[in-house]
Length: 112
Image (cartoon, rainbow, N blue to C red):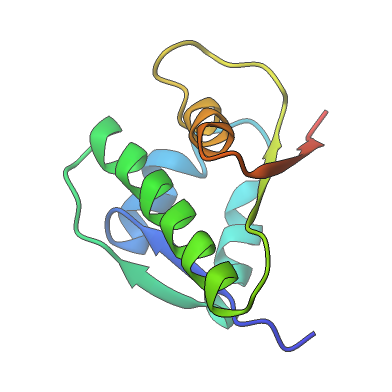
């Protein structure tokens, strides 16, 4: 489809892999590594931990809306998760809520 893949990370790829990929149930490490081989990776150098993750969410949505405007399209958000928020610190739930607050169409794909 000739779509550029860009991965926005709050920290170095290795640190992010350890703190937010391989610490989750399932075998996400191999997929993460595979995606990074073909994508352009942008390290945003944001605060460590929760605030950095939330800021990546906002910047990712900003980038999507900017690209949509440039191409005369509507920005949409894709959320791939189990559909259950772990609570106020759930970064995926934050992404979903942030997209909805921007009146974006959201497509949810279940991992269960």
